[in-house]
Image 1 (spheres, rainbow, N blue to C red):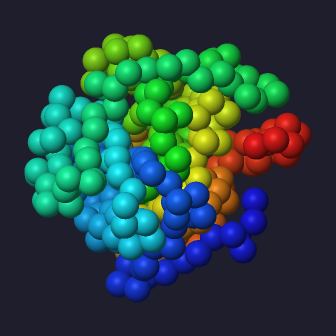
Image 2 (image 1 turned 90 degrees about the horizontal axis):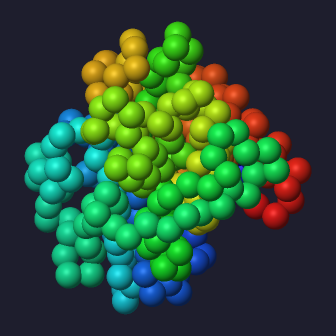
Length: 263
């Protein structure tokens, strides 16, 4: 993991510089963390999302931009967008798509050591676009008495269909919590995470939950936005500057992908 690949700015000076693939892409997929009917720092801020969309549009005026999210609550995606004051960001060439309503395909796990899933189902559109960007919010929750850092990689949970990965609650993806989220994140990366061309982490305020609930807790001012081309590097640098322990799952993924040497 290399911090030199990660750029850092304050929210007021953040100007998004897209990855090279975005410059010539016909279709760009943006996956923001907007799965809860709660504003930032539980979800990404309008300022950061707007800056990313503006940066993409300035770099590539003709691209179709698809904003894709799958919610984690009974509230619909369109209602969350309205509640968070984001509706006007979507125009003819910036479309909002509900991940739970998209056609799926099976993505093989390219890890040399799969944890649980040898393949995972996610929207087929991931293979139908030319560039993919994940925009995560910087959060720390606790599962099984262990801290869990969520940023651009954990943000990808929203792409997996609840119909297939739900457990006790139909509103969440409980199957992706077994045996643990840090372990399953390895499978997530090697099924779809490696496909992503860019990552952004909204660290204007970091969110800290005393338990597993990712929508109830406190926020602490950090005043940073992190971005780069590699999800693992961006998440690690966000943790470093936020003075959060770098999660073991990032180290494990980094070792495995260097072992594989093709990701």
